[in-house]
Length: 179
Image 1 (cartoon, rainbow, N blue to C red):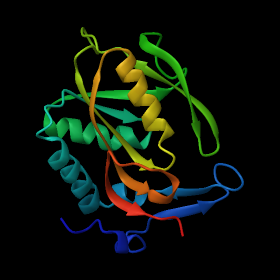
Image 2 (cartoon, rainbow, N blue to C red):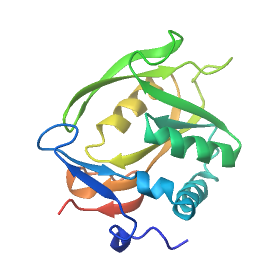
Image 3 (tube, rainbow, N blue to C red):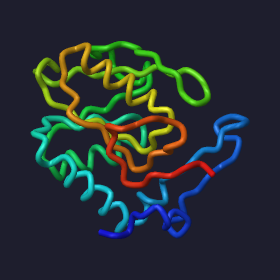
């Protein structure tokens, strides 16, 4: 399991797009990591290793790339998966409607879905997303989960852009600086 290493960023063809989704933002696209079957398998396996002893009951995946990674990890761990969606994308059976947060390029709103025949209170959840930049998406999801009584036992990402945050409690497979 040596595919993911910081010095291999360019070999793995992580794409960047200047001025996307708006001028002044450089978008980091991790999709090539998911497209490469060996790398995707390693990503899932490394998250499973990180999470397996934490007695997690649900993986929480942030829209949209967190869905792909989180669902695969949840399946491998044989536990539930909770998709956190942008506001208005879930049916009206949400428990936490439209919590707002700041992103690098504006505000966004997400919703936390209801669990099937259960409450969040006392449940152990682990949040997965693709990239940790400012961290505001994960912080907002964590706060929403805790407000409904859930216990966030960890947070993980494929890539952490270290110079944009002070994340000390976020597991990451690749740590980079933006230079």
